[in-house]
Image (cartoon, rainbow, N blue to C red; front, side):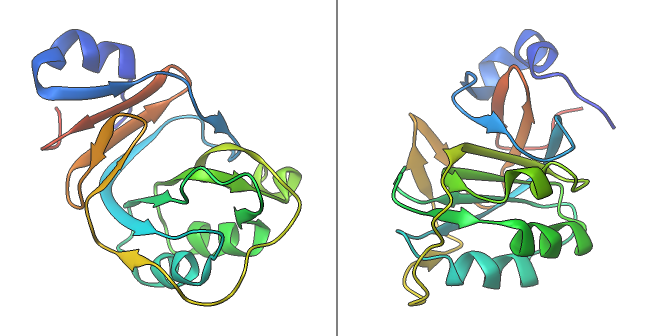
Length: 159
């Protein structure tokens, strides 16, 4: 089912958290939604890969990379894993690389920007925890709706 964040804000303003267009879109899908799964890392994408390989199809993986501009947390290989596993999308409070290839993937990918340097591979971070960034609380199991107008978070699926 397709949703517009503007319509969700009109219909459910008292039930949602709202974020404007701080992110850039890198995947082929410009609109996506699903239940949230979370990862917190810093300049290390081992747990991002692990999450992409294990979260449920239809989920949106939300990655808090602390907004670091020093390296990318997602590139074409991880994007391909997400697409093959049927994730609805990925939202990264950080950077991506391989943007031309990501743009060919049939998945939603939002990130702060692009950076060609790959991340460390130390396996540090946390999964399935409450994340707070850009003024929003990203809770595992809550729902996220994203499009080119912005992002809407809700405690339950909005219909």
